[in-house]
Amino acid sequence: MPDPTWRTLWDEAVPAAGGRAQARWVCEEASGVVGDEFGEILDQPPTARMLAHLDSMLRRLRSGEPLQYVLGHWAFRHLDLMVDRRVLIPRPETELVAEVAIAAAATMLDEGGSVVRCVDLGTGSGAIGLSIAFELPRGRSEVWVTDASTGALDVARANVAGLGIAGGGVRFAQGSWYEALPDELLGSVDLMVANPPYVADGDDALEQSVRDWEPHGALFAGGDGLADIRIIVEGSRRWLRPGGVLVLEIGADQGEAVLALLDAAGLVQPEVRNDLAGRPRIAIAAAP
Image (cartoon, rainbow, N blue to C red; front, side, top):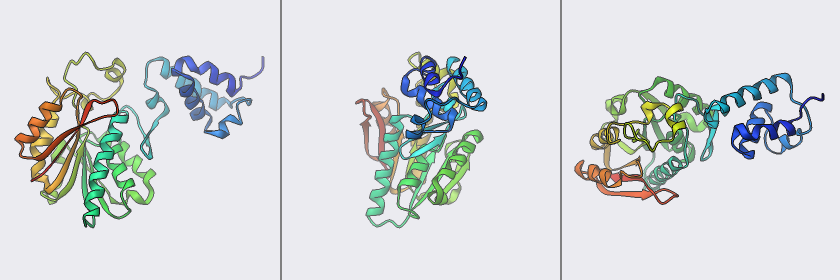
């Protein structure tokens, strides 16, 4: 019996991967060949090492493990981020949060700021904070990325390597929310951004694969899902400079509650913006 080719293996991977495009990504990962070059090897057999790698990934997919963890990396805006079970899988709505944060920082630079001081609280893989560092002009940002999880910070540190020179302005700090930050930042932060846990404990609407595989500490936040958002909002004025901006990802049903929290904290110009599906997912406010 002839050895299987990548064309055959691609076809056979479709059911486990959940689609033809996903199956190709898995085959490309196993082969180490991507894009047009993968098309050139479709009629070639894999090496024993490649085949073993593919078989391992397909077993993981059949067990229900998310594709992003199986691949070990995932695209986020202009970055290709390492991801594993220590961090949440980057999602499109979080790309919009990053977009809003980057736009706010760029406006500050346009208004005459020399360097924008940013803090990404609960950074996870580093998706938001590293995107800020990468997309703002070189040398014009100081980005602090924090997390309570040392494992998550290890992932973020690994992802900084992919930024090259743009990673020079990134600083790491471990701890729960503001406990991670040095006192020198009090009252001086231009931009505070976070994708905090916002799922209510016991929320039956959460996808089973998310509940089974992604870190619960980055998902669940008390009976109403607002426990961590409260901490961030209530403490933000101590750390933001006057006119500094707070940007938060929130649950689709939390808009009114978060607006009330922003108002109670004395923040100004509070608003909630929709994601691409028209759901209210991004809260924004400024320090007076």
